Length: 290
Image (cartoon, rainbow, N blue to C red; front, side, top):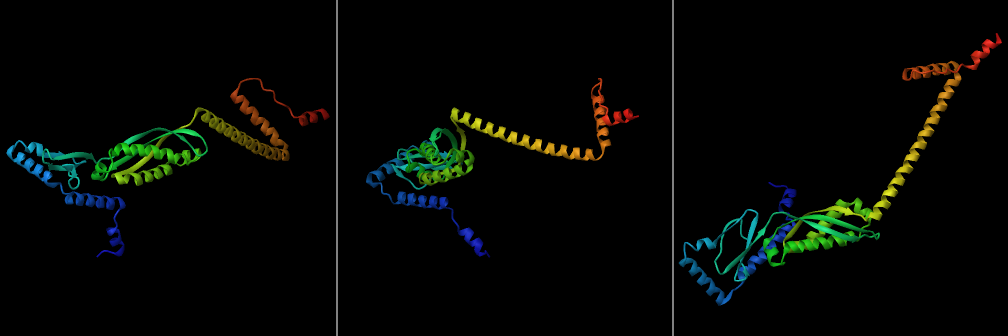
């Protein structure tokens, strides 16, 4: 027994998969219901007859093989014949059938550097990379002349249009979010061509030299300001500590003499030289009174 939640999850169909199945059904019904006419039937008959007369040599022209990652879209007298074939072995009729192979693996291409004017009127150069694959080989052959080239052109224009609505700070800060938005836009446009865009990444953002210098000067000034503030805070803390130490020594005059001795010990251990030791005036005045 399945719970209601499991039943709902099992009946759930992804949009891309549903669209793929619907498109395949449409093309299969169109290919099955299409009528090639008397001439088409006559050419098909003579092609079958030629295959039979030249058997077994004609087998090598009728037998075709596509790899696991490929599909074959077959046309008979210019009309689509069912859905895509493969992987493995399939048959065609010479002189009547033609086929085109479609690679189903994920393909990547680099978006050439695009000059973009941002929302805050800064001219930058941006490039990226797009990963996509064909999920419906029949549509990718019949609906668009060159699906790969169309996807590349669409990626370039989408990159320029999206970055033109963003400021420079947003582009430098939210690259992942912009990549996800661009991926959604590309998939919405390319799914009608049988293309599924899987991932989009912005590679590099090149700034003008003058802007780089201005940003570097701004960052350096900001660091200098923070360094001065930290140094001033350190001086304040040091003065407070010295004041507390002076208050402690003022309560006991012998503490100052001990500090003198400690200082002499440190000097003697570091340098062997003549040391001038200040004699307290209180001690001299005691002997003068005698």
